[in-house]
Length: 636
Image 1 (cartoon, one colour):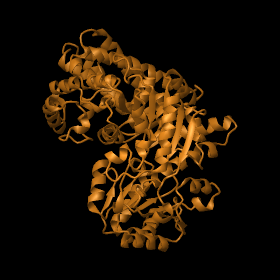
Image 2 (cartoon, rainbow, N blue to C red; image 1 turned 90 degrees about the horizontal axis):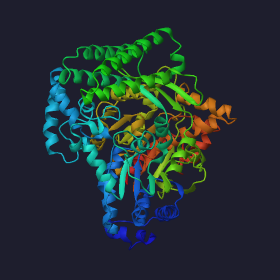
Image 3 (cartoon, rainbow, N blue to C red; image 1 turned 90 degrees about the vertical axis):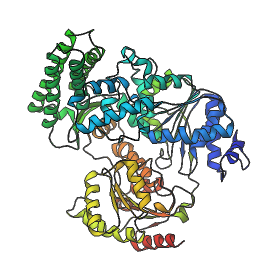
Image 4 (cartoon, one colour; image 1 turned 45 degrees about the horizontal axis):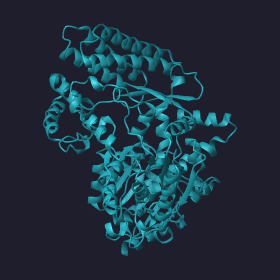
């Protein structure tokens, strides 16, 4: 099999300019062995290893049923439309390949129809987009909303015309036979290789939705790319949550049922309006947005208890009124089931004294979420693997801490897995420089963002922009962007001012831009060549110490006699930092400077753990040396 990776192998024949890489060959051999023997395998493959081909070739060569799960929809699309066709052609693979996304990625014809019928109450912009979508629905073959060019991806229309686990009518839907989700699942069921994402895979494992039986077909080989995300995503699915979006969506559907099919039942509109009002009133009681807090402490507040009681009463009223009209409307029958489910969920969330869970809430300017999350998913995940025998392969560029994979395998309960650490083939000694500047301002000091911006300006200007400024908080991101815009003539792009894809396009097209961003640009962003040669990180990405989920996990760790800082906080910060650092060098010809504006990296004993986990680049504390490196690179 590994002849595929030789100078005259199948990949070299199919890909112009393909160069053999020893780490890629080693990974393919390990994956091949794990597939043959039905083992669990964990592979950290440094940036540039070519891990995608490292698992795709042995997977397709095996002739077995394969599921590949990725961390994002963007990577899912890239795998399905670029990498898999290349390997399929190289191997002359005859099997069928399918792409399967969560149902909210497909246009729901029934909900589109409902919105059209109830159109009078929609804002003008949303109504015009509903009209466009009616036209698009007759042209599209797969209903994948990402392929609809006429409507922006962040449009308010999408939640109205796509379905969720909760509001899908399943086989009771009048348009079930035309359903894009049903068609996508049928194609997946008949395929040999199916590309999904982690959210969908875990939903299938845990939720086992009613009405559609299995979401994902059975397979003998499960491969997880970007596997570092799995523990956190799994904890969402093994927990429970209720959000204002779900409640407002329920109220909207009850209202649509009243206006379209049950005009004689005026009570439906009254109970729907009351539910929507109660959800909005509860959001107002939570106070300032952008905060994640402890649900146990929140529910001790008398005014919150009152607002929650009114919300519970409104849900109960929806349940009682819908019950009286059961059997007259598929939409209302589904709404009744949701009201039942949400009432049970709310009761479970109020039982805040159950051990082994973190209870938390968060809110933005318009919405809130109440949630409980298990402190560990190891036992549950082990159970899931036990129910699905076969090969389980986990890979990412960022799984290890200090060259040890124990933190990752421990969180998933896969301590018996085979492990492999493959360093990046890039020559960091000559391609990169790590700078931790002297005299950094204290983050909590007044004017810290202004002083930091002044300090960083010489490097950004010497590099003619072409820089990512990655921040650990939205507040710091906004303050730094304002400072840079006030003092520099270079274009300064800010995350949130437009979509992620558009921002990246603008960054590359400008050729001299500074992009200021937070977490969503720390991973899954691939800018090669001269377009990006300076990555600055404002501080070490420790989770905020008052985060209730982190606090609960640390307390649980303490009770087990372990060290919360070394066993919980530090490993997660190391893995997050490695993701941000990985944006800089993406190819053998890339050169650049990485700046980490946190003196703890060199002043605290744990700084060594971070440094040992990063690529082996030369280090400096002198900004002038960093400027010289950048100007030398520009001259080459």
